Amino acid sequence: MQWCLPFYDNEMRHPNILAFACWLGSIAVAQAQTPWIHWEAGFYNDTGKAVVSVQADWAADGIPQSYHYWKENLEAIVTWRAGDVLTTENNALVYETASVSNEPIQIELRLSHRLGGGPIQWVESQGPTIDGRISTSALDGAVCELEVFLNETKLTDQEQRHLTNGEPGSGEWDRVRLTVKPVGVTLKKGTRVELQIAGAPIARSTHEIPCNSNPLPSIVVLDGIRQFSFWTTDTRFDQCQVQSDGSNPLVSSEHHVLRQDNHARVDLFLGQNATVPSFEFVNLLMEADGFTNLQPTVVLNFQQFEVQPMKHLLAGSWNRLPSHPAGTRPASRPLWESSLAFADKSDIHDLGPILDLEKGIFVAKHMNERRILSGAVRQETASHPAIWKQREAQPIRLSHLEGEALGSDNRFDIDVVGYEVVDGIELPTLWQSKETGWKPTYLPTKRLAVGGRAFDINNAGLICGYTEILHGGVPNQVPCLWKRDAGSTYRCQMLPLPGTVIHAVAVAINRRGVIVGWFTDEDSIGRACYWEPGVDGGPYQFVDLEMLGIARGINDLDQIVGGTDIDAYLWQSGNRIDLSQIPGAPLKSRALSISHLGEVMVLTDKGTRQMLVPKTTFTLTR
Image (cartoon, rainbow, N blue to C red; front, side):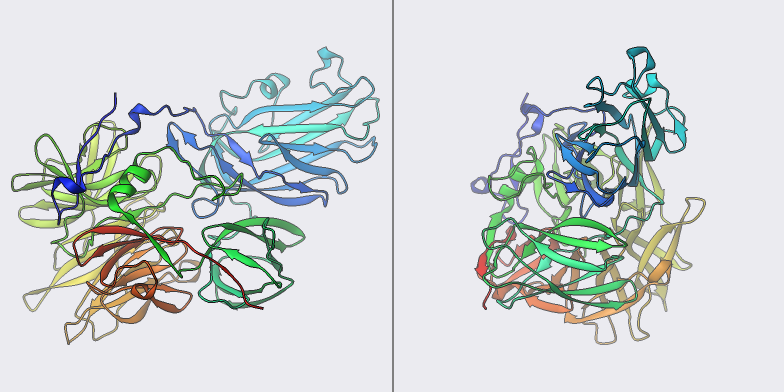
């Protein structure tokens, strides 16, 4: 059955902006018990050690997922005998001997994340040997013995063949070791061992993967010079080059690296006649400790915007299979999804987009990467926190009390944040799904606090928002970070501020823990700011963006958007860009949020919401 609801923007509620919001119940989605792990297509290496990019399947329980780049950086470090060849083929990792040998083949695989749920789908080894094959069982007349270790547990022949029901022992793993031992034979050239695995990433591994970034940023080009510059964090590399499959490939043999604490600025210099397409992927070839790794990234020019109305966003992003136009994404690269704020959470008068219900309305404040809407169900004068999952006919109320759900994380079992009204006071609230339903947790506040709101939460469970504290009988807004302690109990941490500040609010947080918001001092004029997490868990640092208005959104590439109610700006790599000066953007708008591909959600002065998509191609000057 196909469910459809009318969609309206709250400022322009009339039928001519009606757009279908049809759930995917009418679309067949490939279901999978656990997402397949796909190795980087076309990988080839004979050095004896490499880092291989890995991505999950499009569908995991019907929910599109990609575990590379900005989300989880799922990668594998593989070591083997130098000279033999490691390749990828049909989503399997393939090891092939380059010469005859009497020595055992040994392959060790370590993942950057621990996986769960039937990790090894199959291990197959095949000839040529004396009889043209390698068998894993002596009963089959084996000429080789195959040993498989998951972590430190050796698997039996039966377990090697039938591992789809899960790993024996622990429910997670991040290390595989294979050894093929000849039994009185010589392994011929071209002997192959293939490995295919599955399992959803459930936690970051303790293994240190060279060249792994957290995350690797997009490369942003603002003019026609032949130099790419970007900032990145927690990145280890000795060499860095740019590669592309275009007819005029990007070539860089020269690079500069400037390191500051856990940040690094990378300058890449391109070859002659290099054509740089916007909204297309390039590869950064990174080397560290003798390992090599191709990291996909994207070029964002911000020289021209294509406007996508809000109705197209819901029809094309909330309710769709993950697909893309031919030629816009190279093969084997993931389709990147993003979380987006639909409303100005710092403005209580901005309801956000509205979906009509049989009784009442649903106001949408936020959409996460799994396309789950956070907001509220409104009936008459009452407003109750609620979420709305794709393909569901109705929203889910989180509480019988009044309040709003203002954001959520992006995990399989999401946590939602916002506020509930208790005895007339707004309390910052975390909702978590339990067997008995959604359970609220009122986030702790400091002494003299008289309420507050939680605006955003990341996958690490860090929550940002504000509390109101009485000072001289007057409530002042104080920016807060809520963080779990060793016992998983949330504690309230006030974010640092200059001594002249009267009010401040933390509005949004990204995967790395960078928080954006605003503050006012004695002149009562709002100014945009952000808070940078300290090195190795150190205290947060306050940064004034030196701009009137509010920093409302930040993506996982540390790109910030905000400004006043009619002036929209983008901050990146230390630069501020006036979005109204880019062709295609409205002259007056309010920037609400930014996606991982640089798409900016704005509220125009006409009361409509639009997505500004950077889309242009230019040729670098010589």
